[in-house]
Length: 152
Image (cartoon, rainbow, N blue to C red; front, top):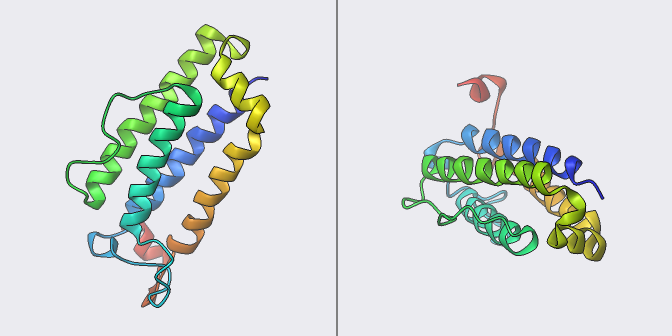
């Protein structure tokens, strides 16, 4: 199985995550999709979840460790953006390197992942992330973002 499309998907997904996170203001970090629904994660809780779960997933499923803590020292919007940008770039670089050097058939972890769990797990992870992005990126409980808000 050729994992090239997974690497390309991850490359676009990381850009999407960073783009959405950069649209929020510092005061938005505690915002939930709906203020009366405590089950929905706040922006900060989603950032924590994204950083921690992605770190664990890449280490455990693909053996890619960025050798850095998954969370920023200061859990601010900018701190999360910088930490995620750095770590996800390393994951992407290491994934591309592994594909180029080892090829897909020599990587037993990837082969196990691909045959045992299929691409469904990876795609499901992306769909979950996209679902959160669609709920949170353009709407806050007290206002709707406009194109002017997004460009500033």
